[in-house]
Each structure stands twice: as C-alpha cells, then as structure tokens.
Picture 1 (cartoon, helix red, strand yellow):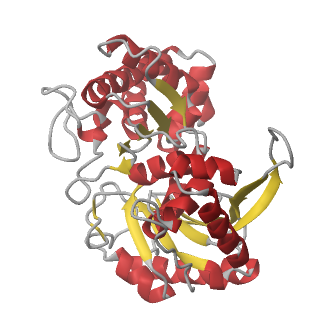
Picture 2: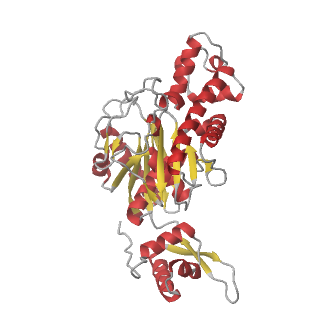
Picture 3: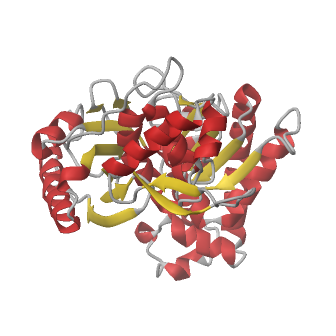
Amino acid sequence: MQLPIFSTMNKKVSEKYMFQLIRRYGPISKVDLSQMTKVTFATISKVIENFLESGLIVAKEVGDSTGGRKPLLYAISDTVLYALGVKISRKQCEIILMNLNGTIVNTVTFPMTEECSPDLVALRIHDIVEGITVSAGVAGKLLGIGIAAIGPLDRKHGIILKPYDFPVSGWVNVPLVELVRKATGLPVFLDNKARAGVLGESWYGIAKNLDNAVYVYAEHGIGCGQIINGSLVGGINDITGSLGHMIIDIDGKRCVCGHQGCLETYSSSYAMVKQVIKQIEEGQKSIITDFIGGDLSKLQFDHICQAVAVGDRLCVELVTKAARVLGVALANFINLIMPNMIVLGGQTILHCPTFYEIAVNTAIEMTYPNPAGSLRFERASLGEKTEVIGAATQVFVHYLGN
C-alpha cells in the first residue's frame, strides 16, 4: 500500500511522533498535544488538519471545556491501517486481521497436522490472507504480516531453527520469512511468542504506555519478553527471553536443551503432564483418571486444571510445587531488572488460577526488596490472543516505531 509520509515538524518532534501520541493517548485535544510536545498550537492544528484529510485520524468526541467552545478530541481511524498477525504453535496456526487500534477484524485457524510442511503452511497463509483481506476490503490498506513463532529463532535472518517436541517433521532451519514473503508478496516480520506477547500487552493491553514491563508465558515452554525504557529488548538472535532455561537446580531433571534443572522441567504444562502420568503409573490415585477414562495417553494439562479445581490431592501438590518454582524464577528475574509490571499469560496461567496465584505470591515473598506498591502482577488482559495481537503489532512498530 501507499504508506503515509510523515514529515519533521522541528528538530525534536516529527509527524510520526505526533501520530504515535494520538494513538497512545487519544482521544486527545490539540491543546494537550501542544503541551506534551511544546509545539505551537498553530503547528499542531496544521498537522491535525493534514491527518484528518488523509484519513489517518478522526474527530471522536467533544472534550471538557474550561470556558468557550468545547474542544474536539482526536483519535486514530479504525479503517486506515491494517496488519496481519500469524501465531505458529505446536498445535495450530492462527491468523488475524487487525487494525491500528488493536481491533481484530477476522480470525482463521488451522491445525498443525502431519502434512503441514513449511511450504504448505506458507501457501495456506497466502490463501487465508487473500481471503480475509478481500472480504474485509482492506487489501490496499495492509502494511504487512507479523509472525510469532515457537523458537529458537534466528530473527535477523527470519529462520525457525530447531523447535523441540514439534509434532511436524521438516521444521528445522526453515527460512519462514522468505517463504511467507514469496507466497504473499507482503513485508514479513518474525519474532518469538514471548516478545510478541509483551508488544501486544504494551500497545493494547494491561501494560499500555508503561516504560518497563515484562510478559511471561507459561505453557509447553516458558519464555519472557521485555520492554525496558520504552523499547523492546532483544539479544543475539533469540537468546534473550529464554526464561524456561534458567537453571533452578544444578542437579535437577535433564532438559531437552541438554542441561539439568531448567525451569521448564518443573513448571511447564508439558512437564506437569509427564509428572502426573509418572505418578499415576507408580500407583498414586487421582480423580484425573475418571476424566480420561483411564487412558493416560489422552491426558492434557486442562485435565490437571479440572482436578485442581475439585481439590485432587495429587494434582494440587504437583501444581503447587510447579508454581512455586516459577515464582522463584520470577523473583530472580525481578531482582535483576525491577520492572513496573509482570504480565503472565499462556495456557498454564490462564487455565489454572491456582497456579497463577501461587506463582505470584511466591515471587512477592522472595523478591528483595519487597515490591509491594512498586511492582504489579497481572494476567494477560488480551487472554489467548496476546501473542497473535503482538505478532501483528510488529508490523506497526516497524513502520511507526515504539
């Protein structure tokens, strides 16, 4: 699409920055924008007029008056800029069409079955993207595609390296960005689910407008994404954010990464399912066998959540230990960076309130100094859409900045 061209208003303030202020704080008046930027009211008025003419913003409602006419308030248009978000997990691929205000216009998912080779997934993404953009009438307003994928990744080169426990063969050293770009003809951006998650929550969720926030997801794997001083933190390729491979016990269980005592071997949903199966096979009793008709191969983490909800002893003890271990890891992490907020998401957090509460209470108990009043813990306000919303947000960040 033909992107809006933002000019520089003065040495310190650009139209792009002004547009971002309207996105972050709108609906907002010209007076407030002038005060925030130290730019004259006349210049602000000219920029607002240009934005209105180009359809980038709309006059939403009338603000409070301090005398005289009530001021108009301005906000980002719902219909001018769009991005596609793609989330690739072990079980499914989810694709959304989203506008700049974070509203999801359409969602399509398909399961990651045995035939889902990288080439086939790229072609399916093309077909779905074409269908939902045409049906929504936004083909000329689409900026690109952002992908949130399981790692590890080589973000710089757009490659999925070697995801462990991935149910489909052929997903090793996959140049995913190149495949999807060739299939769709659109700009494509790739990141891991944790970094996408913190983008989603910081642009549209509970961490909006915070300069320092962390998103931790806990499910089959455990990861974290960080916003520090207003910027998304990144390390070499995909190394930053591998919270699941923080060593908790140097003599602990062997992890798939080859080390011992990694957090994921205790607190991931995958580890908890394995442990429940092991303990039942060793003769321990649990109501969970009734949920699955005695067939342990059918056991899912949600069955553990159900058992915890009715007070099953085996599952309560297991979840308590796993949550406390995560809490210790969070405390270690907090003591290093002391963010404004820790947002927790992923299946383990969202499906099991007991796990969330124990993990948070443990983190508070073990953080020094006690973060009461200076640090907030929250569940992901965007729920299970956090990471796919963050995937689409990558596109907006690329064109508009943080």
